[in-house]
Image (tube, rainbow, N blue to C red; front, top):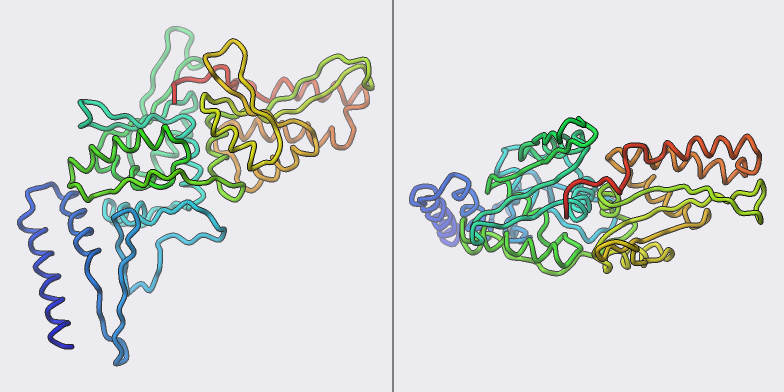
Length: 366
């Protein structure tokens, strides 16, 4: 037994020495190679006279495990979810020598936001990679940059009309930061075309860092109402709407309709949203280039939409729109809109919901 333990210790030292001394690559690549080699070993220690054997987790080809910390995972989740971020947390620690102040919910929200508005780009004959988020709202981009500790936010002024038409971009070019995002996205994307984009990243990153650095998981993750993906996707693609139209069949000659909407060219993801809610419809928008819309309407069923966004709050200015929309929903639930004064109040509030936040004025393409 002593001989076996000494042999494993010597083997570990040889692997460590080769990676640290003989590798011609950058410091980041050295860390990656070391993590992968170490992941293949069996860690053996002695505690109170008993052999304690622990295998490192192998999640997405990169995983570190500390017996001293006596932890199974850097992240802990309280709800069942199919999103897994072990490799992301481990590589983040390798890069920045600290644990990220992030939750699984925030990362899941970010993936939904990315699948709605992000650009997972590969260029230079498949050798170069870039990640871009384009928004008119700079605050959310700076928040993402700060939380992930990656990329730069750039301002793009648009002519003489000033900030109303200006937009901002979070741009990530650093290969090690792209690798961090790849570990986050791998096995956690919902849309097929996003997985195809990620596969090009994986090829480029493996060519750069070594062919075993990351292995593509091309199985789409399943979204539910128990994770934050739809919240992020709504921040990117959603809208809360109230319409007031004349109709003699209703009290005061008007009918008030409330809607929650998502617009996308990917009809499959809208059908999935329709499926998990169990209501709503998906239709082709007229006068568009194959853009589809998921629409949920009806005061009772919208209670389920409200419950979801109370559980997983929006993070952009659309949260303000949602809160104003929710206030109208509360008024209508109490039938206050059935009085002249109440209807007038609803009309005023209606105009404020999507002020400077219209989905028709989106900037950038997915």
